[in-house]
Each structure stands twice: as structure tokens, then as C-alpha cells.
Length: 255
Image (cartoon, rainbow, N blue to C red; front, side, top):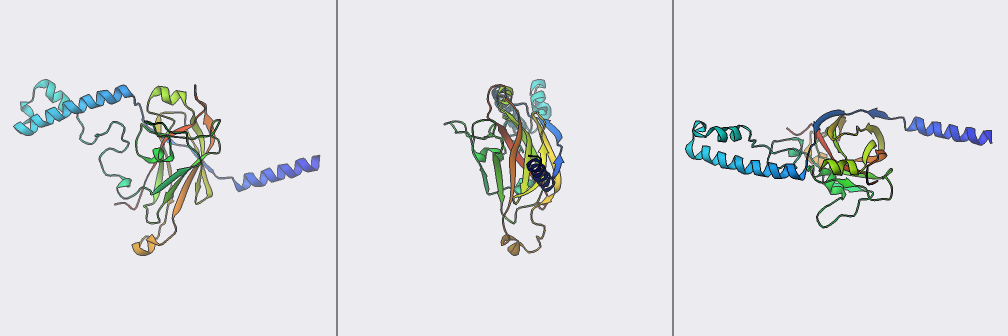
């Protein structure tokens, strides 16, 4: 019995040593505080902004606006066009980056109006989320990002944990506590996620193909993948379904 136990412990130790990969802690960023009510107010505000913009364009003089119109004008943003949009209208890594394929081991069955599939985790939208689709909390389920060889390299991973379209959706559904990250099927890191509606950023060394001098040759190189596997979760108040609103990226080789 002792011999068998020793063999088991030895095997576990080998696995541990083989899997002894770095653990990363996020930098917490913007709080994602969204709701249906907030969307309604945003749309009303946009209508007001468009009205005062027309007045300024017509008269050509901001000073001719009323005190109330000036207050509206000063609080308008030309870059925030979509309440649920993550990046806004400015240029970003996605001007030259992105991906062609994303798929998951499972996903919750979508409804007529709500899509829980893998595509929802990289649509740059706070309203949608990938939700795994197996019984229980989804430990072992994964999402895979598949990149063409010419894709710009990644130096930052940003995770929007849980289902952030509302406070209730976030607390009702489970969130991820630990994600295991693989690059081309090789373990790369454990991402330790906070139980927070803030965006969570992980800085990493550049991932992707570094030899980019000859674009024609670059396009002939192999595709590369990043995989995220659920290892542990924060349990939801109502559902065991585990949600991730978004995993998106920033990096280099774009400008």
C-alpha cells in the first residue's frame, strides 16, 4: 500500500513540476457598470447631443447656445457612439489586429434574442457573454482564439469577468476564478481573476510571430492559437453557469 501511495505521490510531483507555470495577477481597470436603464439614458443623451451639435453647426458659434445647451454640449463625446461598445470609435490594436476564428468546448443554448456562443466573447461588446454549456460550473471547459500568422503580436490580455450586462446578471451567474492559458497547446500561465466587474489586464511578453520583415513569407507561416481553460470559479447566487463577457487584447505591430 505504501509503495502504491509513493508511486502516486511521485507521479503527482512530476505532473506538478511539468505544470509549474507562472501565475499572473491582474491590474484592475475600468468598472463596467451597465444596465438597460443606463442604455436608455445614454440614447436620450445622444439625441440631446445631436440637437446641440446641429445648433452649433448652423450658427457656427458655441456662445450663441443657451446655458442649458452649453451644459449638454460640454458633456457630449464624439468617440462614445455605442453604450455597449468596449473600444469606442478611436483607433486601437484592433485596427490591424483581431482574429478569424474563435471556438469553445461548449456553450449554453442561445435564445432568439441572446447569443451565448463563443463569438460573444470577442465581439467587443459588454452586453454579450460566452457562457459554458455543461452541467455544473464548467470547470475544464475552454475557449480557443485562432490567429492568422500575420496577426499583430499580443502584449496585453484584458478580461471582463462574469456577465456584466447588469448587476443582477453578474451576481446571478458564476464567474471565473482561475483561467489556465495555453499558447499553441503548451501551458503558458494561470490567470488569477478577481471577483470584480472591473476590467482586468494581464501584461505579457509578446505572443505571435516576431519575424515580420517579409510579409509574403509571414503569411505562409503556421497559424497560432491561445486557449483559456476554466480551472476554478466564483459561484453565482442563482445559476451554476459560468460566464465571461469578453477576453480581448492589445499589443504591437499595428502602427
